[in-house]
Length: 397
Image (cartoon, rainbow, N blue to C red; front, side, top):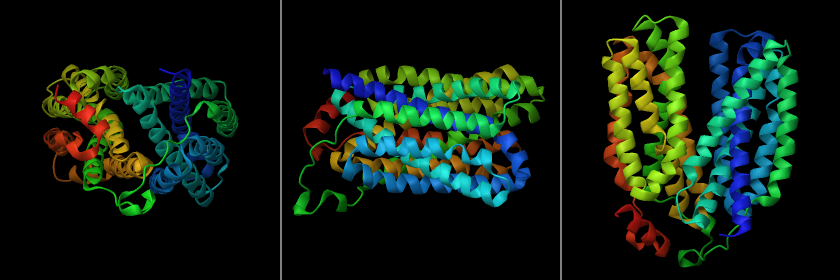
């Protein structure tokens, strides 16, 4: 294993941590930004759609650019754009300026997200074993660090604009310093029929992976948005106790991602998604039927542990489907997955007008079961070349 590859892996960890930190520092300051901009919760909810729309657009642009110019060029640019844009919401003074700020920040985040995941696939290919889940775990660690920093600065009475500006400067420095360690773009193989690789159609298998990402990330979004509320309203837990529902899910998710690479290396990505999504269904099913808070907390823990390794395997499989179109393929999976995460509140909310909140969770339970059944789509086709054949051997071992 070369020294350059080890440095590239460290740089990838750095960019994932930076992305998690920038998103976390924004989330911590949402109430302060809302107050400064003079918008209510309803308006903020609509404006957050611009954040998601900007991220989706950034993902679709960054994919082809990464394939054309290489992650070494696009990752630092995306990190710099995301870092510079994080300060904008803190400067917003009304709904229009806040909307534009969220659109810009979402766009930068989408560019960084796809390009760094594409580079992670390249690093994983160099290592010859699964390493993707650990990158996603470090993203979560970056978010935890941002929560700690944000809590400290808010406790000291620092303004949101000032803290976000500090995060922007830090991000710009990190974006520049980590860039030289990134891997150069691999040599492009000639496309079938002599046409450029950029014109290849996205394979049906990649769209299937994107569909799985949409379902599984919608399930993640359900935990993010509804776990605390369900524990409080359905089981009557105090607010402080209900907060442990999301804490249990997030902690299990981070711990699971730190372990998932070893599991994937031993049993293959198909097993990670099949049994992980199945465990997620069991955990959320326990939440649906929970007679008490401890049972619900155990259910959220199992839900997070089960889902933890699934989405990184989807990104890895999409990037490996075609080396020369890895960026485009990852952008398809990441884009639909992100839409799924945004759709969580929109899907569950209306269902609560028909059934109790805990019974509405039966929909994501069904999605988990569907993902478990569809897990074999991660198995590379035998005709995809020597790299896929090696992967096939490990998957079926």
